[in-house]
Length: 138
Image: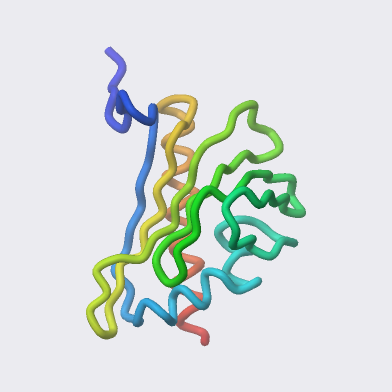
């Protein structure tokens, strides 16, 4: 029997990774939308567009379109690496900000199946670790 953990009727296979970070939301957001931050979570060689409908392409071939952008809160976009045959949707969001603690969340929808879901769980966990390390160095 195949497990359907992570599969919903609305958005298919999805994954979420979150971590409470010891920084104010503005500090995390400023990093995430900087060239250095974007390189970690979206890919190298691109500035993050801020307007819905704007398209992007990273140096490693990931393409997509901005679906929503709310300063200091979230960005939602389509995300398709060069070796995929389908789009997914990624949302990067900050929540629960209380002074010097903020929750960073990566959520990805429309994955092709359980295997891709597990691959993306590992990817977003690694991204989160790299963001944490980069913020600690600032």
